[in-house]
Amino acid sequence: MLDDTNAKAMTIIVTKGTLDWAYPPFILATTAAAMGIETTMFFTFYGLQLLKKDLDPKINPLGNAAMEMPMGGGHMAMPNIVAALPGMTSLTTNMMKNMLKKKGVASIEELRELALEADVKMIACQMTMDLFEYKREDMIDGPELGGAASWVDVAAKSDINLYI
Amino acid sequence: MADQVLDAQGLNCPMPILRAKKALKELPTGGTLEILATDPGAVKDFEAFCSTTGNELLSSEEDGKVFKFVIRHTG
Image (cartoon, rainbow over all chains, first blue to last red; front, side, top):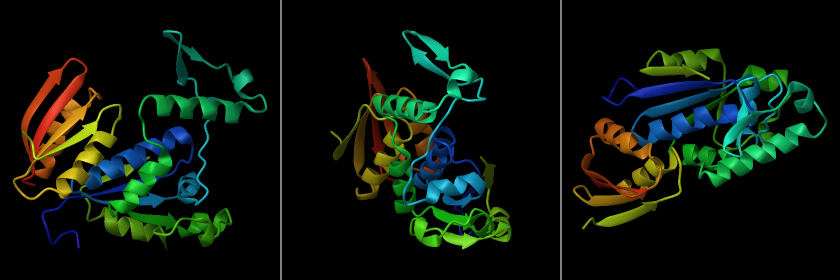
C-alpha cells in the first residue's frame, strides 16, 4: 500500500491519556492527514483511554512542575500539596477545558472525530485491552485491534514515526 | 475575488488547516479559496500546507488582527 505511490506515511504511538497529552497526537494526526499523509495511530497503555466511547480525559498538575496557568497577566503554578487535595482533578480539568475553549482550541472529541473522518487508521493495542480488561464495546467503532507487530509493519514503511 | 471564502477567525491550530483542506476538497481543480484567520501561526502553517500538498498559495496578507490567505486548488 505505502510503497506503491509517492505518498508519505506517518505513525504515532499514543501512550498517554490525560487531557494535555491527548492533544499532540490528535493534532498531528489530523494535520498530517489533511496534508495528504497516510496516518496511523497506535493506542497503547493509557493512550487507550482516548478510544473510549465515553471520552473524558482529565488533568491534574500534581508532579508536573512545568504546568502553570495564565492568571492576571502572569502565570501561576499549583503547589503539589494543593493539587493532591480531593476534587482538584475535576477543578483543574474544568479550568483547562474553559481555557482551551476560550482560545479556540478544538476539543479532543472533535479532533478524534476529524481524525476518523480523514481516514486516519487507528489500532488499539490488544495486550493493553486484556491487561486493563477493557471491552471492545466500550471503545468507538473504527479502530482495529492489533499488537506490536501491527505497528512495526506500518512503521517500517512510513517516513515519520512518533512516540508520544 | 476567490471562488469561495472560509472564515476561520477565532479558531486555533490545527482547525484553520483542517477546515481549509475540507473546503479545498470541494473546489474543482484551479478553483480558489480565500481563508480568513486570526491565528498568527496560520501564516507559516499555510505556507507549509501548500508546500507539502502542492496547492498554490497565491497570497498571504495581514490586515490588523486578521490574516488573509488565497489558495488555488492544484494539489
